[in-house]
Length: 329
Length: 89
Image (cartoon, rainbow over all chains, first blue to last red; front, side, top):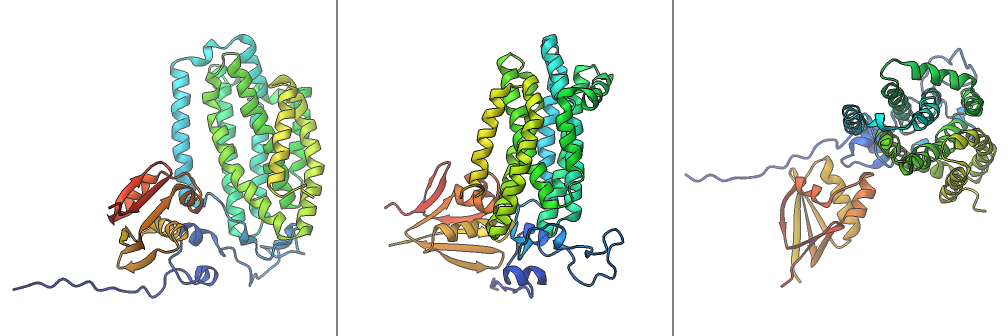
């Protein structure tokens, strides 16, 4: 008896969901596409929100910028919930390992009294700024339009809580787990003159109404200047003084900043390129807030990496803006 | 001239790979078979790391493609930047 092996090919009736097919055509879609595009409801709302009766529940008009299609903004990392969580879990595993290594070997014990003081004064109070960033990004996720945009911001909001926790743990490593450093950092955040500029900036940003302005202020301008200053320049200063072990504890922030800058750039670039009015408005906002941020960071640069470092960071930031197609005319 | 080919499993990973190959090798012919995608090309077929990274939005190691490969035909020339199939005789 002979057996004949035959392949039978079954064509699937649908390759993907209808709303994904309408956008990308009838072909197999990536998970990112299926988990991101055209998910937010746009029609058939029964009521207008009581807290903002002039707008719909999901309304693209919560920013003054116009996009024909907000889904033109895509995440270059293609994060949806699954991939985002997996990536962060991996990063966290590495970071946990570094924290426990630091603790086991008592690497922070070798810091001089002055270095210890500087770290307590510069790094730990930043946890309050991170909490502000968390609230801002959660707010944007609520107000923004288009799932590709909102998911970027809610992931970002969660990241900020994580970073605030790592900063707190640096404090706890330094004070032997008593929590004194956290109380001291709160005092600094509320009273120390060098922190009042940043505190005022964070508090002012909490009440910005236009969500796109807020994402510019928080994620492009403030982070774009603060992260390189503190986590790169200040880290270099510490390393040069022989306190390189602290770099192990802030590595998460550096790799996180490099990774997330890519979506911030993609967002600003796409929206600025869509219309001249968008670009002009973005440039106005950047001009206004950049000065505020630099003013807020100047006293912090003084106690961390120095004014020259801040000037260098500003230069790099100007180059970044140019790459985004801003201030080129 | 002679034909080189590569067959990949038809999954979420390999779809990016197919897109990248088609972009870098306009002369390649894609055949979709049950659970498998076979790509044939006259002379030479190249998989480039930079194109894949663009498609995926993350860093990509050329050897990651091995996870989805079923079979290949051709002499392999591989480095950190690319994976090339061609007949060298």
